Structures are given as C-alpha cells and as structure tokens.
Image (cartoon, rainbow, N blue to C red; front, side):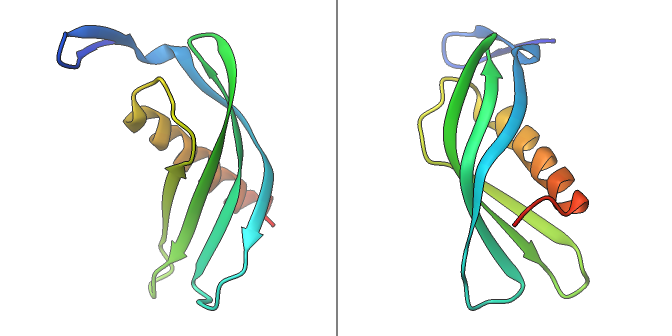
Amino acid sequence: MTRIDGEYRKPYNLDTMKIVELKDINRKETHIYYRRVFYGTAVMELMHKPVEKRIEFVIETNPMGKKHISVSLMDHVEYPLLPLIHSLRTKIAELDAEGALP
C-alpha cells in the first residue's frame, strides 16, 4: 500500500514496517493502581532494516474495564509515526492479553 503524504508529496510505502518484538520490558512502580507504566526496547524492521528504539508505554484501565494504551518513542524515528504507534499499541495489547508483561 502506498500513500502520498507530506509537504513535498513523497510516497510512503506502509508495508515496509513491521514490529519484530518488544524486549527489555520493565515496569515502573506507580502509586495509582489502574495505571501501569512500562519502558523497554522495540525491535522493528523499517524499510527492510532492523532498528531498535527505546519506548515508554502506559496501560490505563478505566472504571468499566476498558484499557487505553499510550505509547511514547524516546528516540527519533525516520518513519511516519501514526502507523508505527498503531502497530506498537496492537503488539502491546497482545502481550497484555497473553500475560507476558511484567
């Protein structure tokens, strides 16, 4: 899939990004029980090159039990952020459902 984007109308090929794994995931202790804060490293394949970037993410559970995941990239990434953040949220939700997060 190709999308034309940006000021100079450069094409982005959205099929060139894949989340390989999340590693070195650690949990920060917080005093708010419904908010879990994690940090770690995301191993991605961007433009067919392996890339490791530091991330921090928060899983917040509302009173109805729905989980909201927010992701922050600590390092600069040369790729459109919206599809990257969406893929990271999906991967984090899968890990949380499997019980693989610390």
